[in-house]
Image (cartoon, rainbow over all chains, first blue to last red; front, side, top):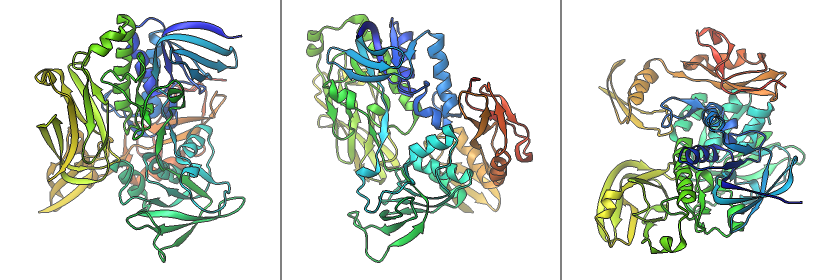
Amino acid sequence: MIDSTWADIVIIGGGPAGLAAAVAAKKNGAGRILILERDRELGGILNQCIHNGFGLHTFKEELTGPEYAERFIRQVLELDIEYKLNTMVMEISRDKAVTAMNREEGLFEIRARAVILAMGCRERPRGALNIPGFRPAGIFSAGTAQRLVNMEGYLPGREVVILGSGDIGLIMARRMTLEGAKVKVVAELMPYSGGLKRNIVQCLDDYGIPLKLSHTVIDIKGKERLEGITLAEVDGRGKPIPGTEEFYSCDTLLLSVGLIPENELSGGMGVELNPVTSGPRVNESLETSIEGVFACGNVLHVHDLVDFVSEEAAAAGRNAAAYVREAREEEDREAKKRIRLTAGTGVRYTVPETVSVSRMDEHLTVRFRVGGVYKNCYVSVCFDSEKISRRRKTVVAPGEMEEIVLTKEQLEKYPDLEEINVRIEEA
Amino acid sequence: MEEKNLICINCPMGCMLTVAMEGSEIISVAGNTCRRGDSYARKELTNPTRIVTTTVKVSGGRESMVSVKTKEDIPKGKVLECVRELKDVVAAAPVRIGDVILEDAAKTGVNIVATKNVEAK
């Protein structure tokens, strides 16, 4: 039997985004809020991110992942926000009926007035890479290895090669080294690292682990357990260069080759997705193409810093609370003029993609990523054909998210504005 | 005068620092966006330090491991000695954030503290 109940706001996911959204929604007057979390505890990915460096923007101190999560979990408890653990959301309908299940209650349905999508992201698996060779034991995604080492207390292997220089891979290079494993090399297909600069310094350089750019795994040896891999240098189009093959014996291969927002539920309910981010298209309120459905954190676009996830999620929580409070009318939405935010040369995407001046706060942070490495360039913002601002940057890279801030005051001076274009201009 | 380039590791911004040095004396630090960058550069070139984060076993807890860190940063050369000392340490549940797990790690005078709450079973 399906038990039907209701909530003002149902939040899908109790990780950093869901927690910050819940706290902000509650503080902004939302009534019944319910967080649905699939894991056995709140905190999401932060629980396995035991390294430090979290919270400098939010708390002005340097915390580890579990400590950062605890700050928000404490607020959730203090504010008496309801949550269900070990609960899997199966489906969300277009009219915001959330179907979920857990061991205690079986299958049940919750009717929500607003939904906040905060499901986070998944790691790209081996299957997405087309690496030839056998499929022996010993090949893990970096995040799986991170959970095994940091939460379950297992060491996945002793001799390690890491493919991909995403942050989790870099962090795991250090982590496996501290646990007594030998990390032989980190190979990156691209000519630049996908991770943060600080992680290259403190996770690889500190321990003398080589980073081979423009290299990839072209063969996997071992039938039951991984015995070794072959690396080769790649040319400008990503094709292996004959004669550059090098064999590394290893029992473990970690893959840190990108993260993909997890939007099966969003897609299922008919939320429009952006093919570049794989996340929902959102407006200035972080509201998706379905009214009253908001998105924040890594389900929206993959972030580098949890601080920015919390900030973004708090905005989604405030907006969801306002939506429930005002019970916005459909015609009101349609009447508002929306300015399009577009990604120009060198910019892959922007979040949000539209702005309504009447709806926006005094400041709106627009986040984006660039498509390549640019040195001594400018981040330029154009209002229709007029160039409004130009900010000089020593370097921008795909691994580091960028932002611009729009102000309401500034936009009110352009009543006929149709498009805001963000682009990279080379000096 | 000599110029050294560093990447600040205090936060994920990773500011690129340029340090002007006269022998072993630091003349100026540029490229930082906050105070931490300045002090990081001065320290990194004279006495580099790191915060160490790792895990120790838990007995009688709902989880089998608890994450820990050095309360303050310790000299870079002491990092491996520090994790080796923690190899056989077992914390008894319940463990609260900030609980001292080991005192004076690797004779640095710095304590190891828990960074996660683990309830007793």
